Amino acid sequence: MSLLENLNWRHAVKAYDPTKKVSSEDLNSILEAARLAPTSSGLQPFRIIVVENQELKEQMVKGALNPEVMRDSSHVLVFAAWDSYSPEKIDKVYDMHTDVRDLPRGRFNSYTDQLKNIYGSQTPEQHFAHTARQTYISLGLAMAQAAELKIDSTPAEGFSNDVVDEILGLKELGLKSVTLLYLGYRDAEKDWLSTMKKVRLPMEEFIINK
Amino acid sequence: MSLLENLNWRHAVKAYDPTKKVSSEDLNSILEAARLAPTSSGLQPFRIIVVENQELKEQMVKGALNPEVMRDSSHVLVFAAWDSYSPEKIDKVYDMHTDVRDLPRGRFNSYTDQLKNIYGSQTPEQHFAHTARQTYISLGLAMAQAAELKIDSTPAEGFSNDVVDEILGLKELGLKSVTLLYLGYRDAEKDWLSTMKKVRLPMEEFIINK
Image (cartoon, rainbow over all chains, first blue to last red; front, side, top):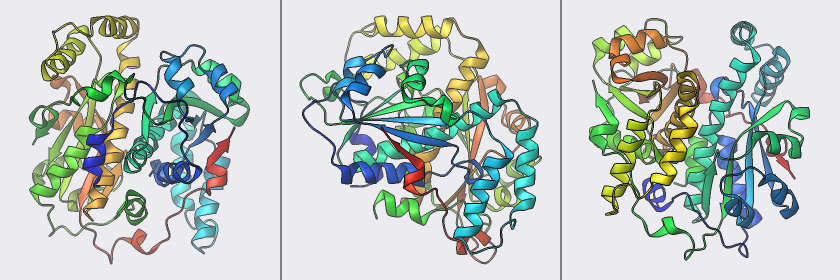
């Protein structure tokens, strides 16, 4: 099916069947879409933590708005962004770029110098505001790929970042949780949203032509 | 082609052929993907301004990092987010939800009251940090749809928000620009990135299994 058909098919599922698991093959292709997401300057300033372990999920639901949705999902993807940029992190990414492309290291120095100047004048709070935004591109593409596979997903911001960061040890990794994506298969009887029409602003209100 | 094939095909094009225009049919399907993007609580707290007019583009390039890319693109999509949440805006969206679903208005009052409480305790700066994030989901899906149509696109954060907001009169609409998406057809000779390998972190570094 086309992307538009898949986007019309999906919705934020409100109840999962806890007995149905996403296969590792399908999970990998969802993660692949997330990995291919473009990011600002190609820095990919975030990581995805994959949580399948039920005990970990039980700990992570503390403070979540819809604990049963997280609990009954097959997998929880935690999108966690860099807490800050640094010259070292930028160099590491661009060393990878030049290595993969068989270019001499330093080939992009004038560009990375620019980046280092920009981020060097900003606070870690400004850095995280920027890294966090990038995760949403990846989140959206992961949902689109799940929909292509007819796997349900639920994006979630309603959880305790402190709880999740602590349980997953994200601080030590220089990461902070931004969003969660629950994956699994809906329990159609309990998922009240399954029977409701998708609602979006009409195109003429959503778009402003200039 | 599949979403993964499309994501592998696309890259942030660095030079457009100014003589090639995206058809209105294709443009509409890209906007449709953007419109279908899920957003926090379904509020769709942003709009897309479509700029095709060359004079407007010439004004908007002031302060842009890659002015010629914007200038030579076929269309510029400006993703502009609400400068703040308000009870009125939330009610307007949920009135639409109940109307479209043939439910009594007020059916979601307990939920919207929660939202009003949360946003009521936050500053406009916190609101915009949140509305801006939502635009990135839509940006990603618009790029994916463009790629499905083999239309090139370039996401851009490197432009003057003040210039763009002023020229498009966004403040009066309660909007602030977040990102741009240039659409068009590449000039393969000038687009140095066309011949380079796509670089992404290896899966084993991007993913953390728990």
